[in-house]
Length: 322
View 1 (cartoon, rainbow, N blue to C red):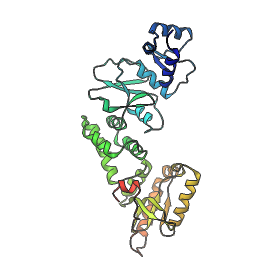
View 2 (view 1 turned 45 degrees about the vertical axis):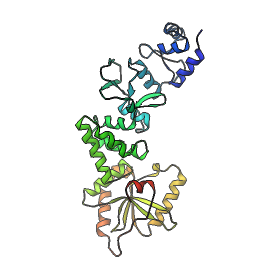
View 3 (view 1 turned 135 degrees about the vertical axis):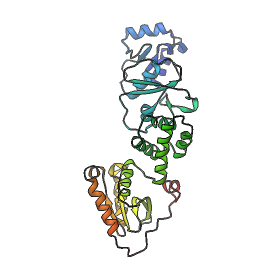
View 4 (view 1 turned 30 degrees about the vertical axis):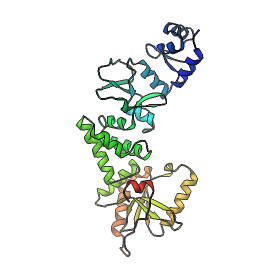
């Protein structure tokens, strides 16, 4: 009879996806599994691959089906598909991207890209939701080979901010990249973020815009409020006592956290000239916003010494060497 309960449990762990040969460890031959699939009208997305009835189509089931359809069991999700699996990018792309060892047969699949690599090792692959994926560092290194620097930068920023990968991990894998173009792109992003640490791609855009106008902002400037808590200005100009906040409400986990943060910023406004910049206004009025920042900084009256950063030991300040 075979252990059908065990096989179905195995399929559930793998997003309701089976190879026809997956039944053999459970005492179920490929022919018997095919017969039941035909009898019960199981979906057959690719030759030799089955989806259990009642399962819902989505990113994970689709990805599991693509991996199951490949002859090489060493294949792994890669590039943007792996980036979504790791939580580096929020939305999956319609295309499923996979990498497998060089020399393996490359099938043609609709909306599937299979790349080969001469240097795909076990150290480059981890399991995510029971599926093989390139590691976060290897994923970003591969993306450096296909994306421009402006497109790569927000991915790196988000991955680091979400603590999915560290700059040190990226620098280590950067030295092992064979393709000079990918190595140079990734190194350019890392060097830029080391010189100007930011918490978001939005903040990076604002920083670059004001730098282009001749200003030199300090990013992540720590300031101690009257209640003793330390806040970090996204951009600060300590000599002018001008600061810019780039993060909107979406960056706060709860409305309560948002309110508490704004109370502290109100306290800081007693000493600082503060500007608020949200993405919608930045998209529509970028020039006007930069003009406002420049005007406030250049017309500030230096009536007191420059602001001194608070002594802060948070992860952000430790990472930036403060």
